[in-house]
Image (cartoon, rainbow, N blue to C red; front, side, top):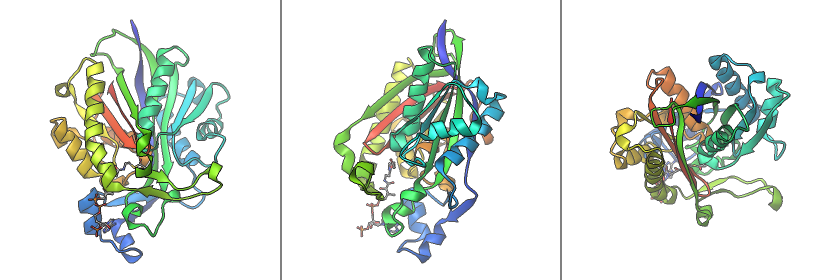
Length: 323
Ligand code: ACO
């Protein structure tokens, strides 16, 4: 028997305020047509004043527990992927733990920017496989609207806010690739590329700062690195692209999503796409897309899912799981 991390619940939260591309036309030199054609984004949600990452993460966690038919007492650990915490510390994860009324177990944050959910899933899987936890809530939650320079047209139109979560549970499985649960993971980073995507402020420099991105440079790395990490993760699972039912990619840009699918030789009707409605929600984008995929009836139990992401660092990776 092999101990696997099986998804038993998924949930999400999106802030009420929806901002259409056209709203940017009044404040910066841009057009709805440019944003759609270069990124695929049509609209995004922005958190209200005072609506924090931990609040949204908690809403996603509650929805996930409801879907799984579990209570906070059933959870051993919470891992939150975020680059936009409420405070420098404590972690968003411990704030969610408190908001859920969970007094046992442990909680911590993971920071790998847009690749954060893949890193968090991999960490949660390690906790389960090594026997340190039986149920782990994995959350991606971001308020990127709070680190945007609203005068920088090359970044401010791309990002959105939201939160999504999965509940993973330890289950004994046969030990082959027909098992449900996480079958393989692949993580990478290369800090030499730190200047391509960063926030130009932080605690130890006693500054705050805004998101800065050389978008076209990140783009060049994205398709190559995403397709290669997905292929590596599949190989680790003893599977190939022909076995994939759905790709659930990080939702940064429709052209990156299309380019990666093409490189993997997969048609777009096997790709869950939400970038048009959410924009780039960084670490929240994958669990948000998984929830939408479930709602649309795309993802079903038993489907083989490959999820992949790249973000600041650069950091990138993929997870192969059977739903
Ligand atoms: N409206 C109109 N024109 C614009 C806008 C805008 N909002 N933004 C930029 N432009 C202009 C530029 O100024 C440039 O003009 P120029 O030719 O006169 O200099 C022109 O459009 C082309 O700019 P590029 O940056 O080359 O455009 P590109 O086709 O690369 O698209 C984009 C830009 C959408 C940012 C794309 O590069 C991209 O998606 N990159 C990857 C982003 C990503 O995946 N990030 C990783 C995850 S994010 C994270 O980890 C936080």
